[in-house]
Length: 344
Ligand code: SF4
Image 1: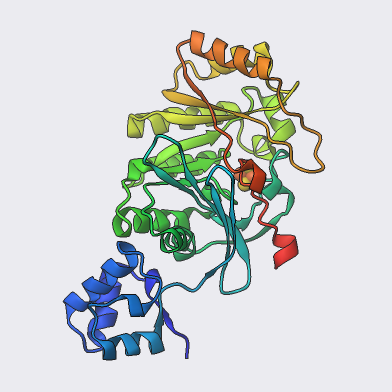
Image 2: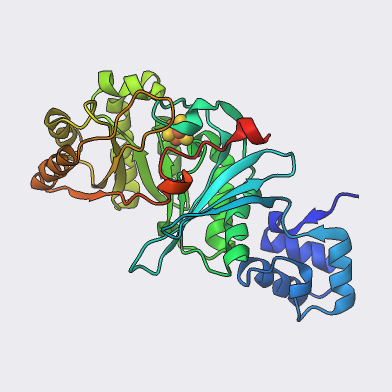
C-alpha cells in the first residue's frame, strides 16, 4: 500500500485525512504544526500525539517522500544538499547564511535539469528531465530545516530549472511556502531568464513574489550569444513585461547581470544597460562569472567590475556585487549542475 505523503496536503486536506482516520480536528492541527513549524523529521518526535495514533501514522503515512542523498558544507557555512526524489531523480538545493544578517536563505530547484540552455550555466548543459511537483519543491526547504533545526526566512528560486517553465507547480509551491511555512511573499524571489508571457501571468497572481531577471546583456545581438531564450522573447519585449510587473507590485525588480570577462563587462555595455533600465524600478546584482569546467568564458578583471559598478551607480542605480557563496563546493551561481548524469 502506498503511504500518504503528509507534506503534500494543504491544511484542509490534512484535517480531512486525520478526521476520516477517526481523530479530532485539533490533532490535525498539531500534526500540521509539527511538520511546518517545528521541523519534525519523524512521527516519534510528535510527543503530544498519543502513541497508538503515532503507530497508525507510521504505518500509513510519511512526512516526505524524498531524502537527503548527500550534504556538503562549505568553508563559509553554505550547505549544499542533493535531494533524491522517489523516482530516483536528484536536484540540488543550497542553504546560505550571510554574515551579520539573521536571514537564512534557501536556493531551491524547480526542475530536474533545464530546457533553456544558457551558455554560461552548468545546469543548462545537462538538458531537461522533468518538472518538480509543488511538494518536491517545498521538501527542499523542509529537509534543510529538519537537518539544521533552523527556520528558513528567505527563498529564492535560483537553483536548477526555469521556474516560470513550471508555472503551475511553482505557483502552488509559492502558496505552500507562504501559507504553510509562513514566509512572507516579499521574501520569496522567482528568478527567470525571461519567459515574457509568464511574467505577465505572474503579475496577475494573488501572490506577487519578488522578481529577479537573468538579463546578462542589454542588447539583442549580445544576449542571444549566451541565452537562447533571446531568440524567442527579445530584450525589448522583456522590458515591456518588466514595466508591467513594476506596475503590479510597485516593488523593485532585481536585475541579475553575470559579468563575463571581455564579453559584457565593457563600459559600452554599462551605458547600454543604464539606458535599458532607465524607466525600470530595480536593483542590479552584478555576479562576477565563476568558471565552469570546459567552457570558453572568463572571469572578469576586478578593475572592470568596479568600473562597471561605478558607471551604474553614477547613473543613480542601486548596485550590489553578489558575494560568492560556497564556491569551494560548486554551490555558487551557475554551478548547480545537479550531477544528474552521474547520479541517476
Ligand atoms: S541559467 Fe537558469 S534558465 Fe538558464 S539554463 Fe541555467 S537553470 Fe536554466
